Amino acid sequence: MESLTAEDNGKTLRDDGNLIGKVIARQKGVSVSFYYRFKWDGKFKDFACGTWAKTGSKSKSLSDIRSEHRNASRKVAEGLDPTSAKKAEKIEAQTAIAATIAEAERLAAENKTFENLFDEWLRDGVSRQDNNAELRRSFKKDILPVIGKRPLRSLTEKDLLAVLRAVRTRGLNRTVVILYNDIGQMLRWAEKRKPWRSLMIDGNPIDLVNVQTLLDHDYQEERDRVLSSDEICELRGIFARLEHDYDTLPAGQKYSGIRPVNSRVQRAVWICLSTLCRIGELLKAEWKNLDLEKGTWFIPALATKGRKGKRQDHHVFLSNFALEQFKRLQKETGSNPFCFPSKNGECHVDIKTVSKLIGDRQCRFKKRSKPLSGRHHDDSLVLNNGTKGEWTPHDLRRTGATMMQELGVTLEIIDRCQNHLLAGSKVRRHYLHHDYAKEKTEAWRLLGERIETILA
Image (cartoon, rainbow, N blue to C red; front, side, top):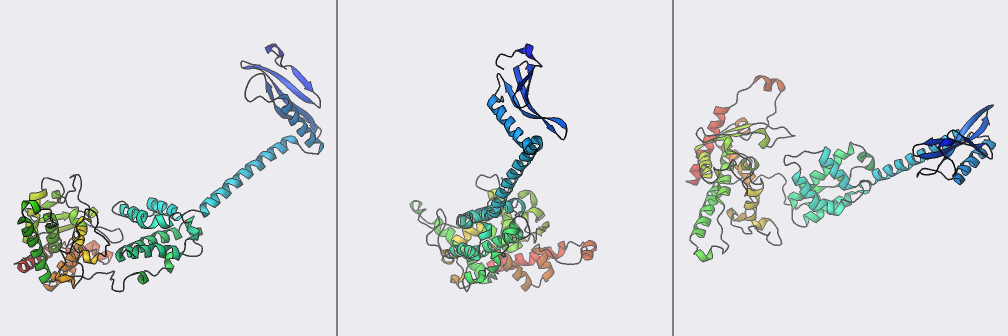
């Protein structure tokens, strides 16, 4: 074979046992294609044994070709068609590979972790208003470091209790409730979908957790804190006193620890109280949606908080008191598109900013072992000596609504001033389109005058 040339093209070579080679001359060189000729069912059949060539990585050696020939000859002697046997071997090999892959996939599915579920839930199962940023933060801080690598099939209520108890030891009752609800929402989503539901064959572990046993006995999930008239007046006095104390400090003592409440925070407090808006809605407000000439504030649906994902536009008719707060705020931030701009001015401030600033000045209720870096840590905004507990920006919304009720405003108008989604038949919503602008304007006017009277 080494002596073959292009002139030998088409020549036939024969070896023992009906091993036949056909010489083929190509541009790349001369090669010999070998096949084994045998008789099967009265007819001659050929079985390919490989190709030998002078050059080329795919060339077989003559010993390999002869070995292939011997194997084929042995199968014929055993009554097997070597061509069919080779196909069967390929099918068996492919079946074995498919089985190996299937087993690997099965094991991978069985060993999917809590973190794997969290990632898929974020991608396909939940869509919060902040693009799930708070979910990512809370899970990465308190949950995933503890049970993130735990296979879901082995997750138990003890694992979940360990996570929630660790948060509870920091005195964060509200955080415990939020994490419990978020974990429950995720696991109930998984119960209905493959492959997760097959990994929870023993049931949903969150159903075995009683969150109430983890909370302080005096903790109330549904807040009912309402500021009294005296507390509203006291709050105004605190704002004024802190500003006075700071202004009268000598220049060298401005960093003694006394700090007035930021004027924007003060404006936010009075606007929330006088308009019944949510603090998040206010902090997202843009000047383009305020008409201070007409005294109106438009809150687009995307900036509101809805029930079960349903949101609606909201029109606020500002009382003289609320209008004055916005005018004072405009002197500070009117050059920016946002009423409460972030430090870089490119967006609105974080919607938790005011709640944090107010909470940091009521530290006796926070159960913190040490002050948070760069944050206030005092009791300067504690009202009524703390006998009624902590107050939050959302309590101002409840307080304003309660004051409206005391002023004789109907419950339906109060709901509309709070932009609640009202229940009712589809027929009623289809035919009745009165916007109640006059009634709401009167309700906000009464509330504004009541606040002015208290502060006077």
